[in-house]
Image 1: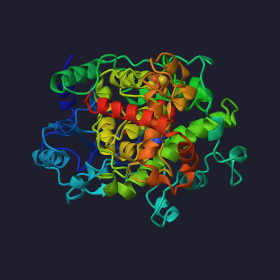
Image 2: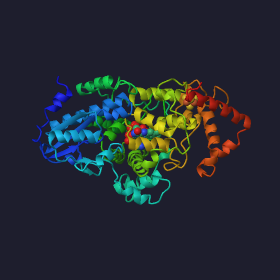
Image 3: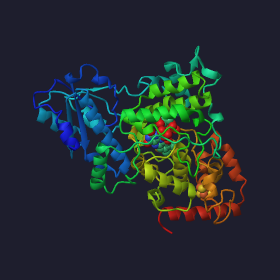
Image 4: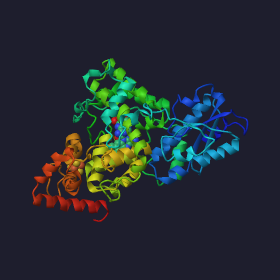
Length: 518
Ligand code: FAD
Ligand code: SF4
């Protein structure tokens, strides 16, 4: 069978002979109903750029590269099949340089595009007079709604944004009031999972010829990338992404809410949707997903706690982090409010630590490029924050390691929510905990661990316990006036000097191990 470049080359017009209108589709705008591609297909050409310059910046997870490249190539073949002329360019240059090459070679006067969501792609394109950028309409909320909600500097809290977004979209609203009477059912969504109900088996996505060709290319060209490409099982087309979403709504959504914060040693994804990568590529429309979830509630086939929880993740968190990031992009590039300086420990790159929760999560990320939210927040980010890992270095790691990571979403989540690196723009207090939280939400992880989450003294005690109290003591002055930190700080004050000396001693040992000094 012909390789991809040969197949797509058949849809390339001869220089000067194509349509007048050309649209550039970046890798995260692969929406089947892309707003700039309405109208007769033969009248609008589509340009894709596969650049070696982006993976040269970071050693991305191999599955992320396979996913992105395969998704772009499938998208190009599909649009060509629908009748669009297609120019698919491989270049060593950054996007502006690559587009300039295409323009000169094919004599295109102008191109158009939606503004890319990733800031590192956007500014170079903004300077090109021949590339008008339209507002990016692939999110649910537009950029005007946010400043009016937060006109003054200070903390940005999700709840305010979320309620406004519910009102504007009408999602889960009855006569101007929240369906069921409450805006947020988070408190119902904290159950521990003990094997029941069983986790439904997900659909699988076998690699086709296009994906296999890309996989071979990634193995050859990006052999030093993070993780493995073996076992790649992500949907690479919008059609397959819909298959995953259909399965989620039919089988998984009813249990999403209650077990949203749960973790399990042998079921890493539990009842999460696994849709983030497909939404972020543009394969799935976030508003459509929220409407589908609501329809399940209206038909009484999913409880409100699950449906509201899912809608809050997409209409709330996903939209909100994007706005927060756009507003604070410059600060986020350097933020490090707690002055944390450790590098990312070798454990995050695959060296065993002996901490089961960490090793299991890293194993999963290496194998798939994914873990669910609580593993990201309360294992990876929590541990890094307690140890004192530089939030920028951790952000770099997350951006590399996850198949769904893009600058606009990973940075506020890691530097803001995950590590308190932004000093409280995003969250009123740091998301830190001892091992007790992990044991409550993931008892099977702790049961398989060589440390004991109930112990708080000595070598056998869970490292999170030593590190938690040490973290509070280290940052006491900073949090003294924060009302949300008053309970942990008053517990800290009650600990004796002997107990605290033991915590400090073991915390220093773990920090030294994390830094590679044994
Ligand atoms: P589900 O639990 O099924 O949630 C449904 C959807 O809600 C997700 O697919 C996602 O689109 C959206 N969502 C939920 N929470 C968030 C959030 N905080 N920010 C943005 N979208 C959210 N998400 C990314 O898409 N890319 C990232 O790089 C990323 N990095 C993260 C780093 C940290 C430290 C933390 C704490 C969270 C991060 N998240 C990121 C958010 C969230 O963890 C993932 O979106 C989610 O785990 C993806 O799995 P899922 O599709 O099964 O999600
Ligand atoms: Fe993680 Fe501590 Fe539980 Fe071990 S005991 S799995 S280190 S929380």
